[in-house]
Length: 84
Image 1 (tube, rainbow, N blue to C red):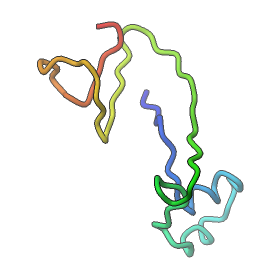
Image 2: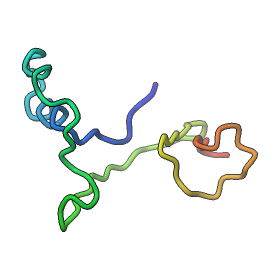
Image 3: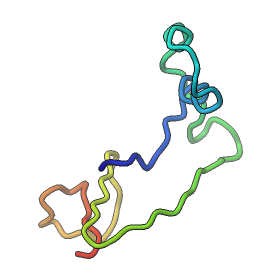
C-alpha cells in the first residue's frame, strides 16, 4: 500500500483539511493552483514532522530525490529498501 509522506500545501488542500465534507462544486470554483506554504514565502518556516515505523523490506520512494549513501547499483535511484 502506498502512503504519501508529504502534504500538498494548496488552497484547496487547506480547505479540505478544515472542511473535509466541502461541496465538490465549491471546490471546483476555487483557484486550483494557489500555493499556501513554501520555502521563502515568510521569514519563519513551519515544517510538519512525523515519525514513521519502517520494517525490513519497506521501500521509501522519493519523487524529488534525496541524498544518501545508496550505491549506484540500485535498480531505481529514487528508491531505497529498508534493511538492505
